[in-house]
Image (cartoon, rainbow, N blue to C red; front, top):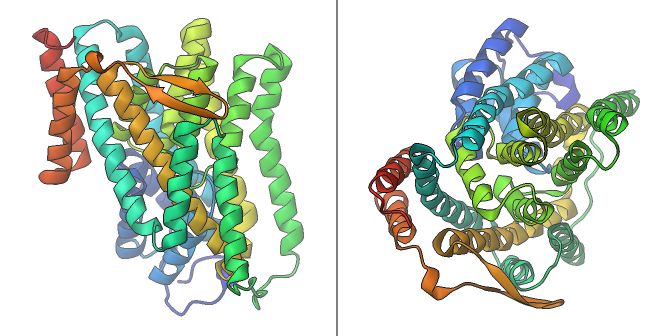
Length: 442
């Protein structure tokens, strides 16, 4: 039978099987626990289950949904999960699939955050994170190469990537301005080349604008309710409000996936005193080893920020606020925006802007990779100079030979021997524990 709501985005000839809400629940609960491997692996798994095995969506509609989610800020895999549920069972389905995609990983990350806070100083825990740091460097480098291969096609994208890297590395240019500036350049360049705006869809549904506005209002109210409650109870200058506001901005202004977020997140979280650079790298390593979106590193930052200021109780609230502000906007984009995807699909100028944003993201991830590498290998990075020009400085004599050795091995495993990411992380963690136990870590 055809899935519900088919008329909203156009007619498709292929017939598919519609699940019950219970089927949707159990399937996405399974996906939530098994969604390792970052966005690419998660999207591939949803395609295999939803299209190939369950036949809930046909190939054309799945790709249609994926293209729309790639246009959005925030975690595209979670947005795709939400879209699939919405496409099949409306808002209820979207809530089920979107929440279950994130919930298992969030719960596991909470447990790991507690282990991190309570276990620091123990040989096992310190060794685990020493090894994971080396794996993180290789994983970030792999992400950089993959995105660069897809996003740097032509002279303009390459130039934008280089400029973004230079601005992030040698100035204090804010991440949002770098990305938004790139988007504006891409939009203007596409307009100058004759790119036209999208034509209106012939399948527009009566009353959909009113319904979209109503849905947007409800989603916005739900999104900001916890932040307002925190302001009323703890005060407008409290940590929970700061976390809610920051991660809301992050969710709205970050395109290009979790690795693009890391630059801005690292800058602001370290500056605010929520985490140290080393803890930031540890958080990314944990996020890579848990199911769910890599952007769950936001939760780790919220947890540590709360733990530093108020113990485990505030840590749990900080983690919850970070998760809510990170993922709540995705439901707004899907529930209010999906009915208009036909128009967005043909927006050539918007596509040009997003191509430029992707190019800027390559430069930003290059900065993240360099920043992480310097912190892992030398322990501390300072910046000399000042506005408008600065440059990173390290003590060359402080090179951590053990960390450098593990990093080289991680690169060999990931790039030379093409081992799966999870295996590389596991091997590095085990070696880190062994080196810590034998006193080989400085």
